Image 1 (cartoon, rainbow, N blue to C red):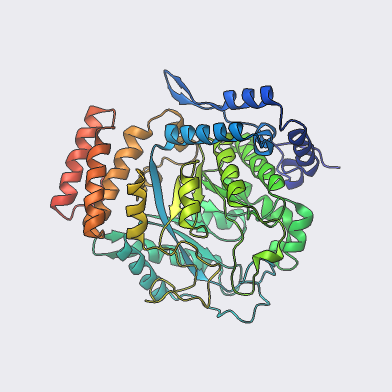
Image 2: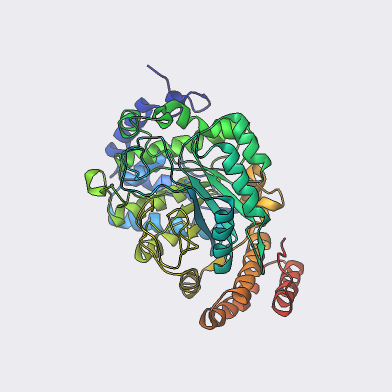
Length: 482
């Protein structure tokens, strides 16, 4: 029997089934233990020190107790604390991005994904570099600056060389005032050598969803193809780190397995990265299984309600306070609005989940990976966020200034976000308003920027930000950053 060891590099030891089951049993026994719950909430509260705001976070076992607790007033306390932590470290910024699907050729047999190799209904497509350029120009014309590229696993159609060539194409396209400044990569688990190549290509975050941490379920859900290898997939982040990628993103597909099991596994993975590499995940995504071609989510009997989904989001934010949290257009406007207030710091906007979808006038459905619930334009999403009091940020400065991995975490932990990320968000929002926004969005945006500039604590930083914003408005000068 494998023994739990967060410092181990073996999947069954750092994601240990016995430890998860014991944790779930402990959480169930203590879900009404108010003194324990209060002590856990107290431990998680942000504390102001001379060095900045500090948060201890929670162990997977402590967080599991909060998730199991169903006492209404305690759940409300969790929600308030999650919002407090999010505001302490990320402020009221919401980072914007869009997925870009390069190819849906795939050799895996994943039973929850329409790209599985047996699906004969779906139109198989792979973008040429000319088509990649068209997609990027379409995304730039919306105002996007940050992409997450996606491709099925297929060593013949989608080799690493194709991904690298596509990244080069994306970074080289300058259209009007548009530029993609950060490319995050969501491709299948690969080798240290290939991760090194991705690092050299200048990627931002490497993202890989575990789908499920329950090994037995994982093997059934991935019956064929290279993804069937649970250990190789689960140990991918360690190889990515070894290859020099210090920003990695975790996630599970909620609905495949029991959500409490997945929650604990996810936090154990975060603890493992911290224990071995000294830095936890840069981001955690919280997708839920959705309808798609050949996929009926009701066939999976572990679906979760919107309320449970919100609670999971809040508990992750409390447990891993410095980690960015991502929610996609899989979720409706209503659900996204709720969880943004509970810790989410990044959202996609105007997403198309089909290969070549952005350069087509009408949203194509014949090659979508999943149904998009929030189908608003980027302008509508930006305006909605501002009306809620958030700053839509198109900033990519940390990545390009080398503030990644533990350097980003130290910036976050020291409370320097307001002197760095906050003004960067306002400057990139100004770019968006000048170059892409509707008149109504501009009006709301400039009022928000005027109010938010006053919150920058450093007088020198505030003065430079104000001058840069004036320069953006008065000329075609772009890409100011702290």
